[in-house]
Image 1 (tube, rainbow over the protein chains, first blue to last red):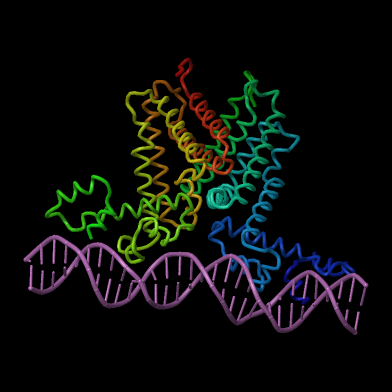
Image 2: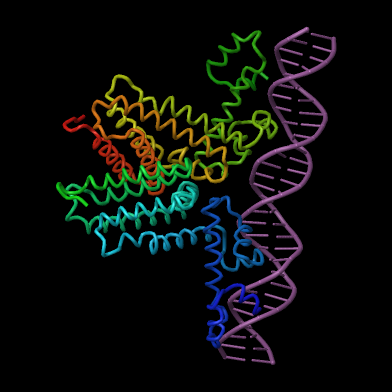
Length: 227
Length: 227
DNA sequence: CCAAGACTGGACTGAACGGTCCGGATTGGT
DNA sequence: ACCAATCCGGACCGTTCAGTCCAGTCTTGG
């Protein structure tokens, strides 16, 4: 049992918890196991798609003992998929979109940095995977209403993050600039670019589209304003 | 047998052929059966994805008798998928991209019409499916080298069609306009927009992105030139 | 210390899938 | 008329998959 716990948790953290927990709930690490499953599944789904990932694959990668171990935490593969999607977007909001909220940088400059960060990430990954959301959307949107709804939320929230950035930048933007439309355009272009870079594996193409996208945003600047 | 042929072919066409073929090859309609399989598979793959389409589904939709009937024409599911992709792109080149080559219309106007035609098509389809190429790309590019290669070709050819249109339009375009980059940008945005409209099923969003894309193209026009 | 609930192990099920095999029908060439 | 090639029908195979079942172990609250 001790060995099992040691396997589940890792490093110094477990020693600390073992020392502290005396009258804690026995299953304080339930959530830790759940997260491990979700993380494992997230990687596999990103690499192979939802249909291409089997429960057994997830079990192996998360070092679970068997089916019942998995089905103790999730009632179905669909539920897992949905939770992976939610978790993926939480992370993306916390980490990926963080730069959009950085208060010390000019809003439009932040947007450019964000675009660049996606380009770098995709380049580092060797142009594989692309966008987890875009992949899941292509694969599942028409098939599974639950995924479609959650993906709608994902794209809406992402768009609203960009909208508030653009709203913040409105002193620099021209009157006619439509922030809602612009935010959607940016996301569509980024998703498309990621998808195409996955196919061509061409760094130049991705950089070119990103550069043009930045120019498109710049086109909405008020006359005379430059960044 | 006659009934079987009548089933395979249709309408007046078969009567014509039956009248004409006397010393023709007995299997002149082999290719007709092949096409029927490819067409059936194309529909199913567009609706459900490649992994989501089983050989049995294809057999049913193409009214084949059984597995061996199918495997007589295709040696594997992968081969079928690849041929579906090629055929799909042929059709797209002939029909979908035809407007890009229309000689009687101004080049940039043609591009706008092309963008609009994709928007209408997707709207008519109830925002399902999206782009067959984008879907296949998301699903298969990382998994299957054959699909990736063929998809690279698809996007390259599509881009080169737009490039030649832009080349034709160069008297109206500014000096700095980079036709290669611009063509890729257009495709990426369109693919992203189609994917997102599949998720949100929002006509307004799709139209907005299309309108912005046209404005982006217009932004490359020479000073003083309007369409 | 015991009962209730949380958790684990592993065998099992039934369906779906891609693909094979082989016997038989149809037909063109000779 | 007969052979070979093409085409068709359907049973069959091995594998994979999501999901179930149950017997067992561990932990905590009472």
